[in-house]
Image (cartoon, rainbow, N blue to C red; front, side, top):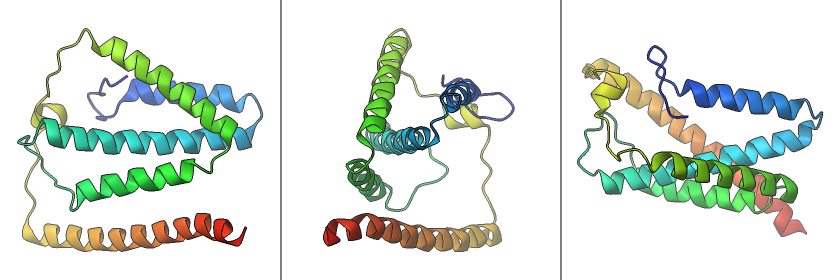
Length: 170
């Protein structure tokens, strides 16, 4: 599933499999359920991504990284907590379906990776050479990052408020 496409640098087999699964689910004509399972699965994937970030940071602290996320560890813990909170209020049947799919995928992953060596591929071999950027480009990227950071904080606060207000009212 993790095989990276040589040209596009994406996990193309996993993308195709997800597309096939989504087409099968759409054929059931239950869009609300499909949307719930998809959103729950996406939340679980984000949580797994955060756990992966934390695990890689711990297991490979000296790995050359072209980008270091500011407050990355805090962001991971915060993201996991927010998604866990949101999942607590999700449709229970969709949550169970997403949980079963996640367990099946994790079991497959564990069985599949037992035969593989646990070795990190150097980032330059994985994605090619990462060129340093000039000061003007860095300043522009930093400015864009600050805008996205503020927008993300605002959207997170709004989303959490949408979940918390009904709890306080009832």
